[in-house]
Length: 283
Image 1 (tube, rainbow, N blue to C red):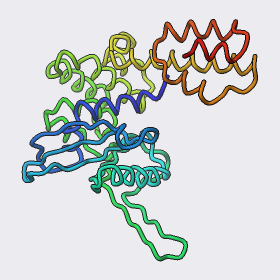
Image 2: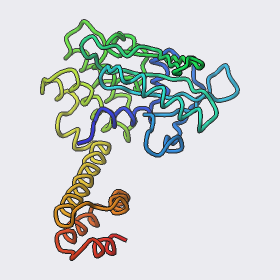
Image 3: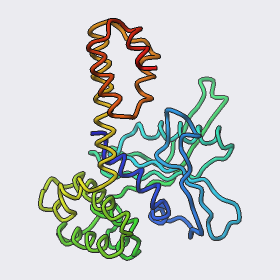
Image 4: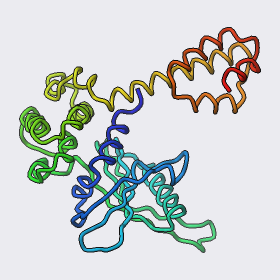
């Protein structure tokens, strides 16, 4: 399975981006929408790009959001790259929010990066808003009464026994979540809980295995994992039979999302007389 923390975080950005802005201490939001990140760059994408109308401004602001599962010093390089991509594509320097979910030893992400050219003629300093989730009080997020903050709470700071806090989270989701979002919110809350606790009893508070099965987000993730596996199997089979696989065949396979068609191509990869025959079936 692909990183469930990454997929769950992107879903939260797309559906509850305003909640993340609240978590970062942004001004009050009048309206917002998640923009298609693909327009920024086809391969290296930020986790999210929001167009936000704050209450005290008439023009929208761009907010680039990166959610990092574990603290990692390489994040700074990634953030500089993402900022540059947005600046090039949109001709606007975005506001940047970095949310780190879990600590890793004594590693710190930091809130700025400085770059200098070899001759020191050019100096670039970039800053961003950093939120380390384990330092945020759970009571603060519960008091906000915002359903979009609830799945993050298992990773926040609290003195009460975990079971008590997680039961409050489950009750909020049951009472306040829109029906069409409830299954995904339960699944994401469970994913976040698993990042911190390896206790089946705590995961069961969010529905356990059954809740994961019922989540459209997790079903989509599993389906993508299955299609990825089939693509890899096809390429391994072709490489074993015919040697290296041309890049255009690899690109053609990557463009196919239909699981049934990939299954048929997997069979054909084991039977086709040569790569030209496979190429003809692929196209």
